Length: 316
Image (tube, rainbow, N blue to C red; front, top):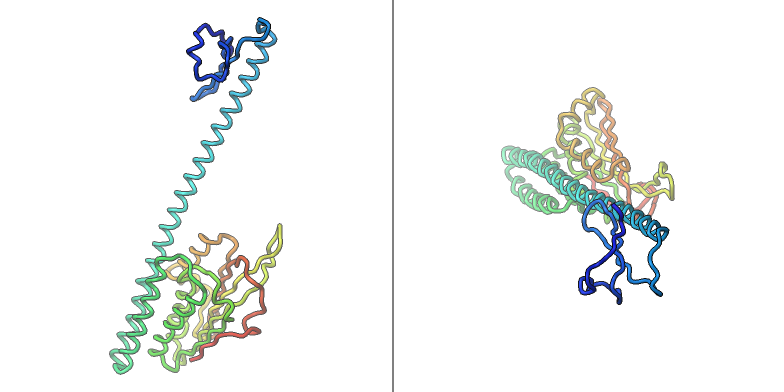
């Protein structure tokens, strides 16, 4: 059917048209879906009529315009679908992260209460002070469940409170060193990212050892040597090392499959940073275990490793 039709309706039928004269013809733009468009053509000057060449040109213009409008409509629908998918994915990711944090909290609380119970039986005079520290510690944990990110400093405060409780239990068998430059404490990292790793160091490294050992938490900035397509970015490397019993590669792999804390840390790193983050764990029997995690830092200032900077250290 022709896209160009003659118009015999009275001028009042086109009152909304910007044309000042009675339309001579209507050029229909044949889009696939509504809304459809009509271009009104007024009377030509000097009584001139539209010739066959004029009609062919106008119909070609109408078809081209229709194809363009259809393409724009499809593109808009795709953009809207993509936005909806991203919103759904974001909501699903947030729900997944909340579930992971909720999974960590009972695990952490169970271990802390076990420590308090042990002290009540073996050292009642120290149990009250430890219980008060646990109360403060749990308050900090609950605050972090409402925010996916916190600062490295807040995370270290939580870790120090936890280690104080464990030192009350293990006494001289647990020694602690935290080596982090004060300037790094303001950097943002996912909440409860490091604490489960420290807890694992105590539970699986120090506790089984008759002589105990040391837990070292260190952090420093380093240059991303793998960065391509632009300037290399800074990375924050966090290392958790214990000098406990250690383990074999096979036992380590089995433990990673069964463990809650370590699996949660790895999963959250993938969700937040994808391939930009890394997680590595190594262990040797009778030597100890080291966990290194690396996350990108936006706008951070590069500095020397922690042992070359003014650092905050806690020793037990």
